Length: 185
Length: 185
Image (cartoon, rainbow over all chains, first blue to last red; front, side, top):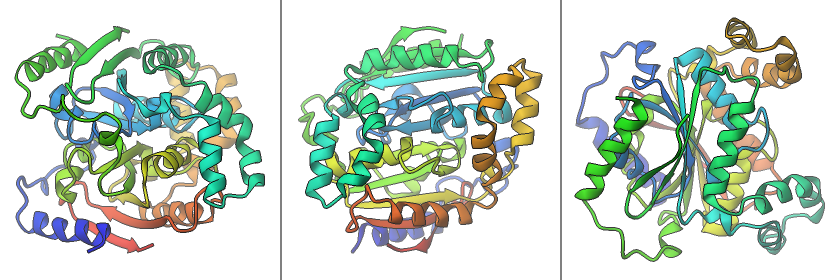
């Protein structure tokens, strides 16, 4: 069975006998995160279904934004845009940037990505179009902690984010589940 | 207690008595998603701790990327970059774009965001710097299903993504938990 068919099949069983009935929820109210917190963290597979219980987070508590290495790619990138929606439309008052140990982004380089792309038939000209941005992003990410500190600093300086929004920096361990505070906003 | 202190306190208890011991995992192997699948979905709080059980996804199965409205903001935006890392470094062979019903992005507009930013003291000049991009992004998002179809089409045409990577479009219901297939790659 394909991965998608498997998900659809599991989902059919889940919906036939849901563990909790959310059907009566107000769909405007239920969008607002109860903890007034947005978390920016990594797409790492070891965080799936693990960071939430390790931090005591339930459905409805927080917004979660996830990208490779929880890094920013500009003053108005997808993460910043998501945070603006959180702040201005959903009542978010605090932002937690949660990096993690053993983050793959510290191994990813322009060289490794370019080599793999060329080996998979990507046109050299398409790569040239993004080379400069790729270098800044992939080669600029050295240590997960430094990246968290840099993202926190960039968000605190972003003029689109109000000064009273607290921005915190933290690190998570993908195997022990330990959360460590780097910088409290 | 502040939200951050509360998370740290819950985490201390979690780590003192972890439900599963992952400490012996190989940290290179454990990064690779077992289902060779990357999911791009929304930051919505109702998906937290809900979409994973509803789709039968456990820690280690998939990579999850989350942004407001699971939309793309360019040919090499944070989501595309994350997907490139998934494909070229982590063995991902399939991508599932999972939008959801009742998505707040369909209500977000340049007008609503600008009004809220100005009311919170953001400088009109900072807003002017991103006005064009904001309009394309916020006002361009009308219906969650249409956005999924558009993201699927954009990724299939992205020259940085190999043609043999399957790209699927799906919709999720944040209250019933139902997953619906829109377009199988």
